[in-house]
Image (cartoon, rainbow, N blue to C red; front, top):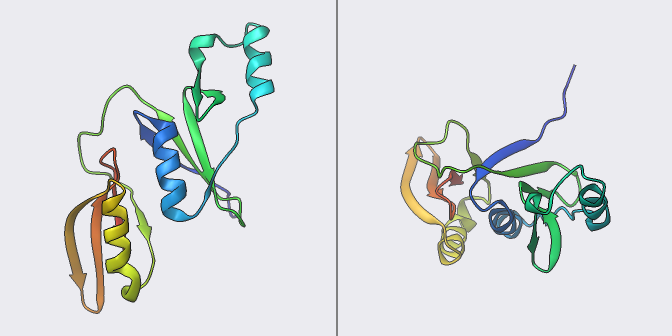
Length: 140
């Protein structure tokens, strides 16, 4: 049996990180239902402290998601109080192809990513980078 899944990434600023990754991958930030959020607060199921405003919209403070425009595959960015302190045990590989990798590394660096190191194994090469919150990913 095959299961559907979503990847969840801890973040101190989930809405900003979702924006960054949506632009990086060409995905879309998943809209949040403001009417539903307001109704949950009005009915006492949530408080104003559970919400925030991001880009002029009422959203849940605890997280934001991005979705692939065709497949609907989803990545959730959830709020955690602590910053990243050690190496990821899981990371994304952003596969752009050997010819485009250099330009993509430059584009992402200009947007706040950091180059950590370059790797090579046989005919394969990659650049390990960190997103604006320090989460590692590779450009291949």
